[in-house]
Amino acid sequence: MYKHKRNKIGSRCLECGDRIEYGRIDKKFCCDQCKNKYNYKRHQSEKAIRTRVFSYLGRNYSILSKLLAMEVHSIDISDVIQMGFNPDFITSFRKSSKHDEYRCFDIRYLRMPTRLVSIEKTITDGSFIHK
View (cartoon, rainbow, N blue to C red):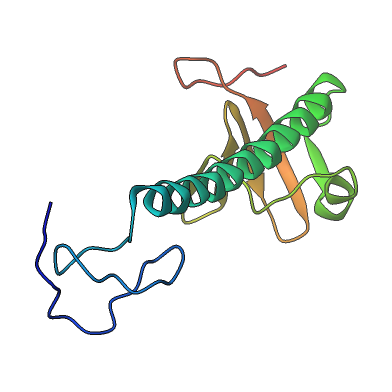
């Protein structure tokens, strides 16, 4: 433990804001309790973001799977958004000179200005299932 006074004036705990009187010059917290509380909150926030993103991806995947089950391979973007699809959440993107290819896990689709087209499920080797 450091017993000397800090030379740095105005150093405050990131959690509670109390002045840090003793310890290393780069110390960020006044005690272990504040450090643990701060890190817990930070990780909870990151976990909430991950949970929300996976929720959107899961919903998108479910909608695309239902479309494939109904043998729908092209749909207006406005219609699919009304079903709950969020086009901002994808798992991969590839741009070519002719079109933009999007994926939600193993389902691929091309996004045109007003439609999703060529909705297809991929096989594990990267090829596509054509019906």
